[in-house]
Amino acid sequence: MTRSLSSLHPHTTGPLLLAALALVLGYPLTGRDPGPAHAHVDSAAPAATGETVRAGNTLYLSGHMGIDPATGRVPEDSAAEARQLMENLRRTVTASGLQMDDLVSVTVISTDQKLTGVFDAVYRSYFHGRGPARSDALADALKGGAHFEILGVAVHVPRLPL
Image (cartoon, rainbow, N blue to C red):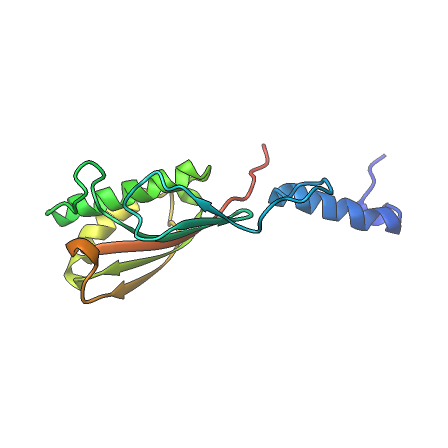
């Protein structure tokens, strides 16, 4: 016999739904203190201009730039800079236990609107499908002579096996 949730006793339906939701969102089901509301993440890419913070299932990525970790400099070629920026971002996201496809929103800052096509060609190769919601902004200058900077928000949603 198949039972629907509506056929369950009203006193058990609510807690069952809350427990299922908590599991899907990755919250602990114990009464223990889960710790601080957020934690600073050590970036695997030294090119972040600020910090990366994880709060629950959400990762807030500060401005990442295309600084080459081996040289500490921004590559001269704008396509190489864009690739390095995306690699730095990918390293930070994956070091935090997430994937690039977990990014839900990014803001790309550029110093020259004419370089948008160069950046886009590299950017698209890092995502399956359409990628995250994106905003673009122009700045007069960026740290270290960089042409690009990216900020982002990633959300980890546990995937259930099909």
